[in-house]
Length: 262
Image (tube, helix red, strand yellow):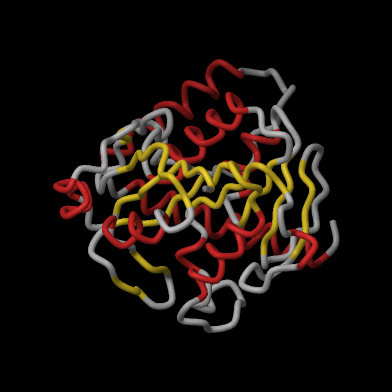
């Protein structure tokens, strides 16, 4: 073993021993030693697997199997399902989550993506273009019949992802998406909803009143769903005056719109 590898291994053992000594002070972790001793008993003289350095993972034993709530979980699954049903001729995504929504859609069809951030991987069914959508490439005018942008436009112009500071960046993005869509095309759109504000440089939060007025200029709002502050999903909710004025009770929720270009 090379000296550098030995040093790394010794440091690993030292840190593990520190962790084990810390565990010994807490009787609530007695189960860890009981489990380990039971494993050694069952192993006996079987050397198929060596017993390497102990690496205690203590938080998983009583955790749930996973989290099926929150903005990204619900919006990614919901909008991917809508696209599967709609079967558009060409679908373009702007800045949505790669390991969520984009991966969902790529599992059953081709999807083109535009993002200001670079991606080096090449994955089947995903076509990538790096661009700042606050500036529209002319070849994208009337480009497709279906566009999505989920939890992305609230960031445009705040500099968080290397984009230039632009107070009106979100407006430029929405206006450019309108130009990208053919007449009658569908825009799947989500952003944080609640009292309208900028939390620099994380994101903007939009009021439903502002969004409904903004989108209605060029779109018919076909459906609205949302994820509330607790992470629960509400599908096909009416945009009544009360829901609009109260932002559906959200301070930091997620509004999900299906819009059809006029």
